[in-house]
Length: 315
Image 1 (cartoon, helix red, strand yellow):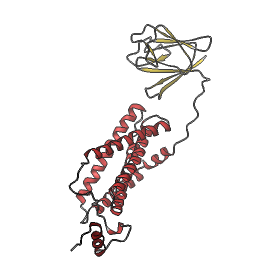
Image 2 (cartoon, helix red, strand yellow; image 1 turned 90 degrees about the vertical axis):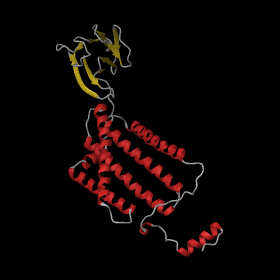
Image 3 (cartoon, one colour; image 1 turned 30 degrees about the vertical axis):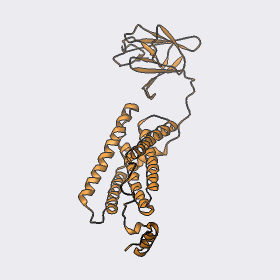
Image 4 (tube, one colour; image 1 turned 90 degrees about the horizontal axis):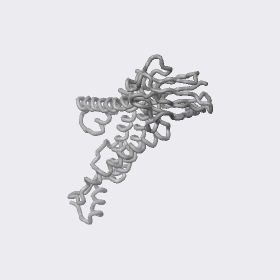
C-alpha cells in the first residue's frame, strides 16, 4: 500500500514529499531508515509507521530520546492511530501522511500580481522607476518652494526615500525567508517603492485639496482615508510575496495592520489637540496659482467679505 509522506514547516508549507510502497516505514536519523531526517533532535531510530487492515496507519515511538508528538503538542505514549491527512512531530520536524486517493485542493489561479511585478523587476523598469522617483522629488521641491530648486535637498530626499524602502523591503524579505523559505528582495523592493510613490503622489493631491478647500476637516478626512487605503495595498503586496496565505486571510491581515496604524494616528492627533487655542486653526498651504480650481478673490471682494463677517469696517 502506497503512502505519501510530507515534511512541512510551521507555516504549513511543504519542504519535502516522499512516496513509499511498503506496509512498514521507519523514521530516524540513521541512514538505514526509510525516511531519513537530519534534525539533530531526532533519534537514530525514532519512530515507525505500520499499515493496518482498515487503511489507517499506526505510529509507534521507538523509545526515542525526545519523544513523538501530535500536531497539537500532545506527547504520544506508545502507539497512535493516524489517518490520511494527519500530522505528527519528531524533534523539530513536522510530518504529514496521505493516502494516494486523498482529494487535493483545486488548483489556484495564476495571479496577475506575480506577472506584473516580474515585469517591473526587469532592469529597464527599475531604471524607469528611479526616474519616476526623481521626478516626484523634483515636483515636491517645486510645490514646496517658491525659490530655485535646491539640488542638495533633492539629493537628500532621494537618499532618504531609498533608505526607507530598502529597510522596509529587507524586513519583509527576512520574514519571507523565515515563513516561506523564499528570498524575493527585488520584488519586495519594487512593490514597496511603487506604493511609496503613490504615497508621494497622494501628498500632492492632499496639498491641492488643502489649497482649494481651506478646510482642515476635509483635509484630515481625505488624508486618513487615502493613506489607510494605500497602507492596505502596501501590506497586501508585502504579505503576498512573504507569506503563504489565501487571499481572504491576506486581505484581513492587511486591513487590520493598516487601519490599526491609522487609528493610532487619529488617537495621537486627538490626544495632543489642546482644549483651548490662542489662535484659530487655518490652512497655510501655498501653491502656484495654476493649481487653484476657482478664480481668486480680489482685494476689494476680500475686504467686503471680511467687513460682513466681523461686522467691522476695515481701513
